[in-house]
Length: 339
Image (cartoon, rainbow, N blue to C red; front, side, top):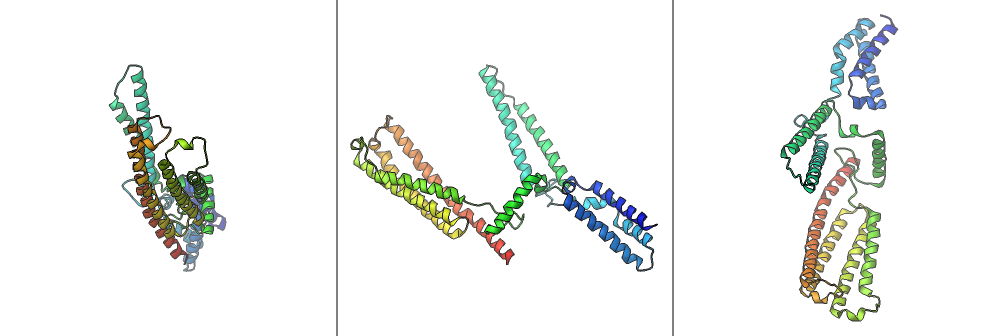
């Protein structure tokens, strides 16, 4: 076998491997070329080692190809990616459940819309069987699709377009440059827990609103308003200015110094709770509220609702403060890895 024939034999072998490789690898031309070049280099190296032991180069090439096995078997090794989880890989599982949930909501929504239309037209009919049939069809189709993707070794990033991957590469580059922690498991930048610019602008606007409450510019109808109500407005203004200043500080700090953010959130929770006594006063004395043409029970209900929302907001902020521990851990992992 001449040199040209050996090269043709190897090229033919590599071509058969390429045909059997998963589509996600074929889409990445650069990675595909590197893999095929690596396999070819391995074949020549092993053949040269065997030829040094007295075997002809032609026989060495044939022995290496025989030892490596069928192209299908080699290509199959590149499909074994991801952590197994039932028949769908653990890597694709979150995307699988998300797609399944979204499509299920779409199916149920479509059926509800048709049911409402039929109800309006006087032809109401509860089609439970139709809904179950639709959900079963969605579950079957989506599951089969994701099982096939898992068997081909697809990962979530392989389902993204080249433009999306390029945007993520730019985002990763910016994250590394600005010091944003990189998720250790997937190599992606940890999402920012605040938007500094929005936080700064929002804080300034909030402080301006609070300042109006405190200053209370002279208006022609001010004499019609109870002094106690004006005092409550000033207190609200002080609290609003305080919370706005906290937002401004957090925006200036940015996505750094997590302990300071947690401390500021704690102060914000305290300030939000301070609103409750003022709201209780207004709820118990609705006559203080001027120019509101509603019954007292409606005003009390409104301020009661606001109190509930304040309490929910306090719990939400407490949850955010606790959630920042995840960011801290990933930040520490990123720093340790850099060291």
